[in-house]
Length: 201
Image (cartoon, rainbow, N blue to C red):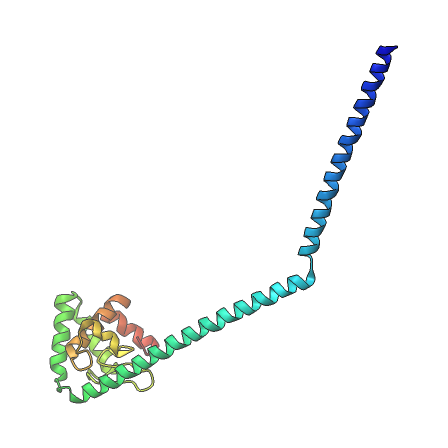
């Protein structure tokens, strides 16, 4: 009899433990479900999302405007510097000594043949090219584009890589012009052929 009572008590105890365990699991799952609902509700709040979108657009717009203002300022500064350089070049060119075209072409011929190893045909192409572009005038300026000098560098200040006297010295301009032709066309003959097809080089 005692054994049976003890057995029944054990069964009741096990059932009670099982009920408690089920209750705990149920409570835990309910809490997780409620938390998930709150997260979804928070994320799906249309007003909150709209506010975030508006803020992002305002920030993006501000960044774009700031970048545009910086770029515009840089472009204006560059244009100002180029205009000042062009004016300085004109003023210097007015005081530059006149060098005969034959002397300038002789200097160019020496570089074409002996420095670059090009041909007489290339030199003829160069003469034709710069006859058309500037007439071999050191102070030749294009009022519409701003190109300057014998090779019509754009802007003329590019030729400063060959010397500070780029605005008045034909030899400085010729050295720069031949380097430009070598780098972009390979030879004066090629540059002249391109010019004949496009009317610019």
